[in-house]
Amino acid sequence: MPSSWVPVSASLVGPLIVALASVPSASATQYSLAKEYYGSTFFDDWTFYNYYDNLTNGDAIFVSAQTAFADQLAYVDSTTSHAFIKVDNTTTVPYNDKRNTVRITSNDSFAVGSLWVTDLYHVPYGCSVWPAWWSQAVQWPQGGEIDTFEGVNLQTNNQMSLHTEPGCTQVSPNETSTLVTSTDCSYDANENQGCIVTDPSTASFGSGFSTAGGGAFVTEFATSGISVWFFPRSQIPSSLSSNSSTIDTTTFGVPVGNWPSTGCNVQEYFQPQQLIFDITLCGDFAGNAAIFNQTCSGVCYNDYVIGSPSNYDNAYFEVGYVRVFSTEGSSTVVSPSTSGSAAGTSASPTGAPGTSGNSAKGLREWYTLVLASGFALIGGLGVALL
Ligand SMILES: *[C@@H]1O[C@H](CO)[C@@H](O)[C@H](O)[C@H]1NC(C)=O
Ligand SMILES: *[C@@H]1O[C@H](CO)[C@@H](O)[C@H](O)[C@H]1NC(C)=O
Ligand SMILES: *[C@@H]1O[C@H](CO)[C@@H](O)[C@H](O)[C@H]1NC(C)=O
Ligand SMILES: *[C@@H]1O[C@H](CO)[C@@H](O)[C@H](O)[C@H]1NC(C)=O
Ligand SMILES: *[C@@H]1O[C@H](CO)[C@@H](O)[C@H](O)[C@H]1NC(C)=O
Ligand SMILES: *[C@@H]1O[C@H](CO)[C@@H](O)[C@H](O)[C@H]1NC(C)=O
Image (cartoon, rainbow, N blue to C red; front, side, top):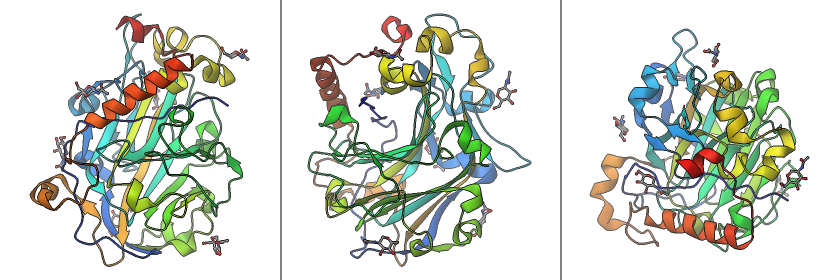
């Protein structure tokens, strides 16, 4: 079983994360709209990473907002109102350089009691391409990570996962997937692959996703547990496609992935999450030789990242919308501006809010683990040389 490290990390955003005025105490099924990213204002409330991929050793530069807009790596199509997040597919990249791409993190964080939906028409794929739609707390691994959508290269199925401190496991899930890769969510186990559930549907990733017209992912971040639903476009329930300002998860049926609080106390292992879209290239997961050669041939960096850009014509997200809901009767949105003033009331068990030093610690521990186990770390020659 291959290791599959997922993106972690030090966010450049520094909102102070604090306890909320109201944290729902019971498991909820009713949610109301709290925040929408859609249309011409889609990109307004995100932070572009603006640095090379120093998180997962990808052969990628996550550009600034200015470069992303100027080079059309992030834009909203005025006809469809869909947002595009892309890898550069117009530049011939010389040997030793990395390729431009995008990583955006929501300025707001969303606390336990939130649910987020993204409607996608196309997801990035291709040899060397490693896309993810996921979330993490500012402090990692203490505040946890939820990977709703992730995969690499020409894989055909989405894999969902949680990453946490030790002690969180997937126990007795009520989920449709039977493809459970691992049940220990600890970053310190199994080379930090997390507790992975793979979607059996080939419409959940790659070209199969777009062929099915895309679809919608729903992530429920509740006290009772974390759940992910995936609906190919033809199966999106009317309770979602109606763009209602309230939703009831009982209309969704059994989720494809489910991590109940009985095995992983959500309030203990998770803090408010920032949403992230990113596309990196090669790196620890896509570029790992044993994973790369499962679906692609050649050498990740040398044969794909550099040279002709045409390999990246399908390396883009086309997003209909992202909508975030709060448990009915509460507000789970933690904005950077409001969080600072309440910092003194933080109930965070992990110390000073807003610091990311622990992420670096997590990374170092991971590398130690990896090196100790003799695991091949192949992220492309470019990484070593840059
Ligand atoms: C989100 O944060 C970025 C900087 O990190 C800032 O440029 C942008 O204006 C913020 N968006 C909003 C709506 O405050
Ligand atoms: C959904 O409805 C809201 C009003 O509640 C509207 O602002 C928004 O544009 C709609 N979104 C989509 C994706 O149609
Ligand atoms: C699984 O979830 C479905 C849908 O929410 C529910 O009807 C069913 O009772 C659950 N099954 C178990 C064993 O909890
Ligand atoms: C893929 O790479 C692994 C590790 O380098 C190797 O053991 C395996 O034989 C390779 N498989 C193929 C199909 O080349
Ligand atoms: C780049 O990708 C887009 C799709 O995102 C495609 O329309 C375009 O033709 C591709 N090639 C170039 C050179 O822009
Ligand atoms: C990545 O680079 C940024 C910007 O220099 C820095 O703030 C952050 O700590 C770095 N992260 C890691 C894990 O090295």
